[in-house]
Amino acid sequence: MFRKIAIPVLAIIAFLILWEALVRVNNWPDYVMASPSDLPQAYTKFWNLFLIGSWQTLWRTVAGLLLATFFGTALGMVMGFSRTARDALYPLLVGFNAIPKATLVPVLALLFIGEHDFNTVLMAFLISFFPIAVSVGIGLSTLEPEYRDILRSLGASKITIFRKIALPKTLPEFFGALKVSVTLAFIGTNLVEIISPHGRGLGALFLSGQTNSNYPLMFAVLIALAVLGIVLYYAVVALEKIFAGWADTGA
Image 1 (cartoon, rainbow, N blue to C red):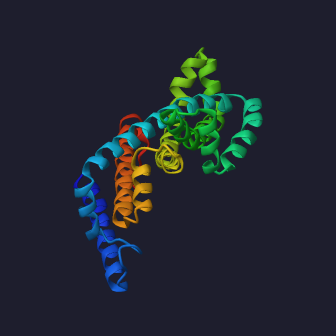
Image 2: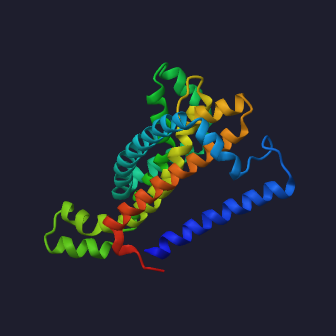
Image 3: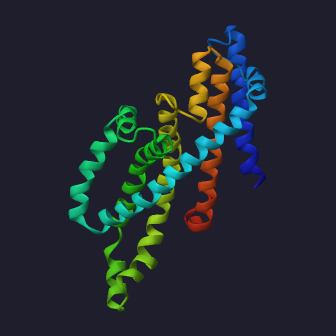
């Protein structure tokens, strides 16, 4: 346990020291590259905005991720159990995922005028949906047929086959995709917060710093987003330990 905590903490400290040294060696002013030592002042001055913005960004990201998990899992199950559905839906999913999501922000803003929270949650959902659906679909479609045949010969129902074989087989792929989707959901949330004229959250705070040429504030927002991403990522890791800890080889 100590090793799992100490190594990431030491890596973060080493990164901050390297960042600080890089700024000082190159003698960069804060409008070129703010250093870690510039950030505490921004957090102290705007602490209330950081608290409000962090909560706004976090709950909308989590809401979008939960929707992506539910609908992505459901669609993945459909594709995993039906070759016809898989052949029909894969091209659509790949094509939609190839569309730059920033181009969808004004479209959503026009479709749902004034519904900023809904637009933000929807973008987080759209950008994090693809990995979950694909991973669940692939996990189920590659299920070993001999296991399924044995259980069928013993009189097992489809529900029993799914619970005993398909679900455990898919869980490692599912949580792997969920870890990727966590960061993607934050990207979706911040796209709307920054691009939307009525944006809120940390993305809007970043835009405010850019508008006012407050570069330490901009970098402080980026670090805050990174911290939220790390927290949510390790929340998923904790869930993985609970539900799919048996898949960890310990390597």
